[in-house]
Length: 269
Image 1 (cartoon, rainbow, N blue to C red):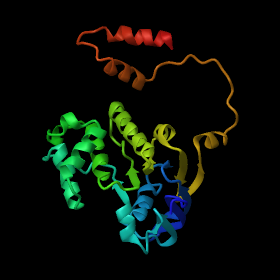
Image 2: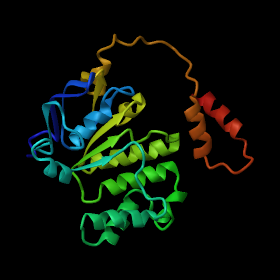
Image 3: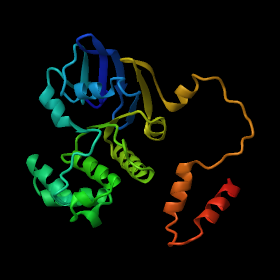
Image 4: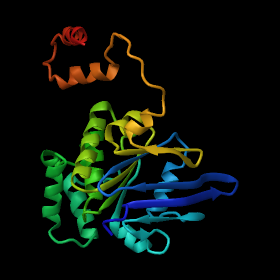
């Protein structure tokens, strides 16, 4: 099984009456890699993830996850995966630890408290573990959501637009969590409409457009599709995101001259 790709999709089609969402999708995902499925809203990304997670049946084609066919071995697929949707599925009344313990008990795992403590530490949530999730920031909720999805150590994780609606700091926190997953050997299929997200995280990138994969390759391979870059001198101005992170990340005391710090940063650039 280890010689097989973690995910293999061949000729998958899905339609809703006259609306053809997927028109013959083909790709493979290597084990322990991050695969980004890039596309605009309505491209069919979520539909494809639902098929791979056995939540929908394809009209045509085949797909295997962790060596199991999604149509004929759905139960085995479900035991091998975790799916994190576009919005954090956490109970805001419970604490972070209680959310994790609940899921561990539902999976009939031994020592749910120890499992919760390990995941809180792994996702840098130990200090907030006893707080109600309703007090968490967006990034903390998302990290907790991903932590909950890892209970039981699934070899394949689907992240459907995991940073939708997050601020720059929270997004960077989630990115680091995704990188850590891959370093630990977990296969990650990431859907996103953010180009920078795919560029930062993915080992391979596939672009889904109008129900078809129109390109699939590494970032370097995709860049080769364009003409060679010309070398020109351009004065680089800081982006608003860089300004924001520079100010907030500096932990400057109230009333500090942050404008001067940003100006100095611009001169260095």
